[in-house]
Length: 223
Image (cartoon, rainbow, N blue to C red; front, side, top):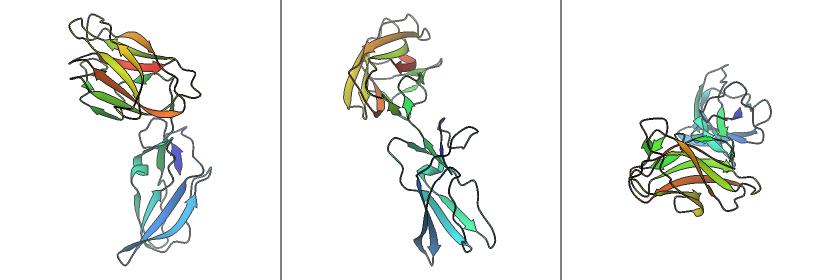
């Protein structure tokens, strides 16, 4: 089946729903050449290929909507060595649905990053101006959200800000949070800034500017 991988671990966990409408393609290695054998569309019970001869097959999900983030085997394929009278089950493909922007995001759950590391406590730390962390498929809905909030920790000798950008580290700037000092690197305090109107689903980038060790970030959300 193709399933809604809500936690992004690539495994079909209890309670994660089956997704319909995905095209699953079956290829077979024939005399050293890979050929398309069949295409199935997923339904509420998954997908199925029947009456297959013994041989080596490859199974792919091919029509991944941009609002989903592929996980597990959705990022590659299954190779199945089918024997006479045999079958293969649990060849599942994960697709992580978008997250509401009002979710409280743990900063350590980045999708990609530059220069950012785990801090010594429970957040992330920066090393230089221009460092960034990416968080994929965040759904801003119809544009009613007006605020970016982040749990930050910083010392008085370090100065900088966090830019909130869309879809790339240099993408549309929707807000800039000037870091206020909290007195210690593990004293996380929520700070906020206004954002411009954003609609739909985007990848969000937190870009740290101003100097080294601007702030530790534990979590963030939009409101």
